[in-house]
Image (cartoon, rainbow, N blue to C red):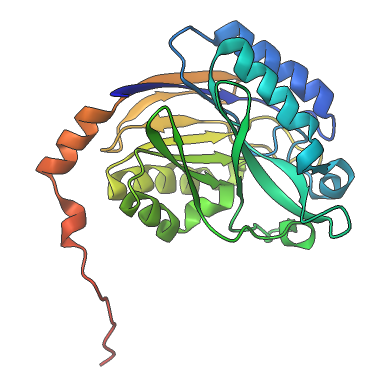
Length: 273
């Protein structure tokens, strides 16, 4: 595909109530989707919200996941691919029960074709993701209709190494699906833009909005950047969607004219003096 149209959904999750959140996602997609959309993207933990004490109570076995089945139905209904934000999954067999912060990838036929388990777990400022969740072992790049997407979740944005690895592996679009706090807005705006600029790659930065049980607020302000860091579309704190059509030949032409990655040194050994 020379172009791909993205629809990213920003929402406030009802804490611990996945069925209510299923309904909200259904409504937001139904109200905003157009026939041109190729890929729907959802935010981190949209099924239950950011509440660490809900993780183990709401975890789903991957093989039997209601969330995966729900997303499969949406994919078939609208003939779209879905990067399913994330939900808490149980993996490794029913007797191991390791929990992961998992992004399911669904194709147009409603089939689960891959997953990405969050590689970096946020466990600071009274959050304790690593108390419940197991780290994913590697980055995952998925190809949808010939377009390569590099997947990341929330705290991953602070680690440029994972995005550079995606770029070197041929990623066309970088995606970060988050539940990001309002208190760190400057970090979100700076880091998401930087990942697009330094890799000359389209970047989808999608997060939740709304208030958490602790009184803390999610940021909202989801954006889609082009390969130069220009904002193609954005949304403030309200629930809703953002959508953009990404021109891949245009991006490749820009990369050919500004071959920044060729200037990377093989070794950056630091000399102390």
